[in-house]
Length: 196
Image (cartoon, rainbow, N blue to C red; front, side, top):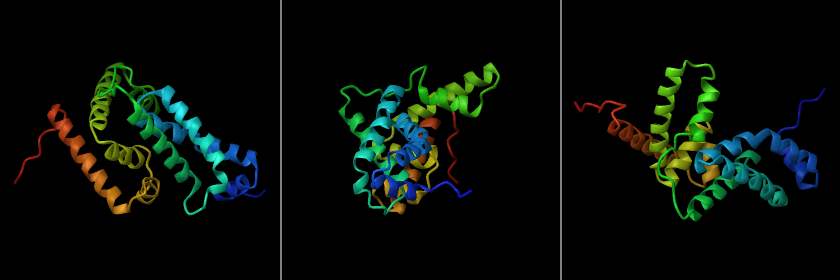
């Protein structure tokens, strides 16, 4: 039995009209694309729309995929751009995490599905403060942080998605963490670092 085809092989098939191969790519990457859109948009319905639109656009443009990057980084790039466009087009921007922020709830169910109620409440409060800190970041810092820290992409892949050098990705992550740390300190969650 031969191993399943990798993403590049599937994309080669898609480029010659194999819709089933694209279906395999969608199933492989749909959750990741939805997750990055959810973290960026903070709205499950909008994130679902972006995820679907990402794959519709990718399929329509499959013949133009040049193969210089992995197909999943191409999907991420489309999803990030669509998410940023939605954020920019909003008339009113939500600036704080709500009580039922889907990012907090998803993280709690993924990491601690059977935690004690008091621990869940504490984790939920910490999650909201972290979401507030992430929401306060610029679009550029927030997007980079989501790709690397939340979604776990290597710096090289994030750089390819964002169209910048790896060193810029590292600097953005450093800046984002510094700003989040300052926010947590201002909320009394982290102690101020003592200067020697």
